[in-house]
Amino acid sequence: MTSQGNAQATPFLKWAGGKRVLVKQILQFVPNDVDEYYEPFLGAGSLFFSLPAETPKIVSDFNAELISVYETIRDDVDGLLRELRKRTNSLEDYLEIRDWDRSPSFARRSKTSRAARFIALNRLGFNGLYRVNSKGQYNVPYGHPKKVDLLMEDNLRAVSAFLSETDSAGRPAVEFHTGGYKDILQNVSNPRALVYCDPPYHPTTATSFKSYTRDGFNEENQIELHDEVVRLTKLGVRVLLSNSDTEFIRRLYSEKFFTVNELVVRRAIAANSENRGLFTEVLIDNFKAIRRS
Ligand SMILES: C[S@@+](CC[C@H](N)C(=O)[O-])C[C@H]1O[C@@H](n2cnc3c(N)ncnc32)[C@H](O)[C@@H]1O
Image (cartoon, rainbow, N blue to C red):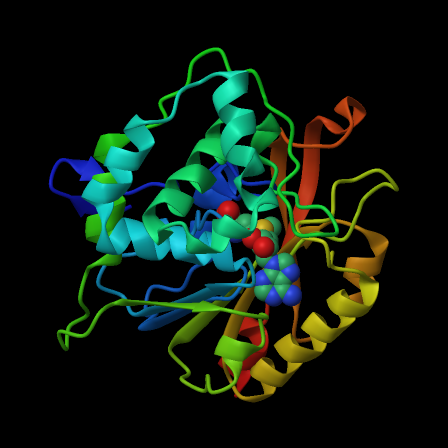
């Protein structure tokens, strides 16, 4: 973890599939000579926030509203805190801001007020889900949280400082992009880079929550991602990839140059309460192939 003054920057969102509880286990697999970090499925960025602030990081997610929140925290944390102070933990306030995206004026609202809405909906909504309907309208129900710190002022200020860090050459250390995961991986070839992929998981049961956006991520997408990881492996780029521990994923990553490591996790977010409990997930690395070459 990185220190910013007295506070450490930590993930500020609850995120379905977030790696917060696994991050200590994942860090044990992160090589200690990483001089460039790529995370194309950023979400709440659990591993991202655990890396040294000055390490260059190129990160993306295809959720444009999410990336815009990160940029707002970096560029206008005071304005964001002012907007967040207007929000309250009540069903009425929740439904009022949730409905903003039902009106054409949503696009004209300031980036800062939209970011505050995103954070408030995430803190107050059910189980940290992000879900939109076929029209792209947010439709997660109110979560009735008993106690919630909507402001998280110390952490948001620490996050702002973390996102504003510069690398050893004085350039901004963090670069944000919106888009599909392949976009930021196009030109990676640095053997000291690390790519961490944390895609929507292959479902372990028919009811597993798997639709982060209206597009979802199906088996064909998992196969395409595998092919992208193989492409990077051939270029000598180190990759770590999280996924669920299913037959399909193990078969997909069965080439000799992959190591399938098992991590044990107590999962808190599931569409169905039967899915709560201890699970094995996998963290796949291609380091064998890279050491050999
Ligand atoms: C499992 S979550 C990542 C969680 C993150 N590692 C954390 O600790 O919070 C997967 C993320 O991938 C994004 N996503 C889904 N499909 C994508 C795609 N095709 N390209 C880029 N991002 C995608 C989702 O918006 C979601 O934020």
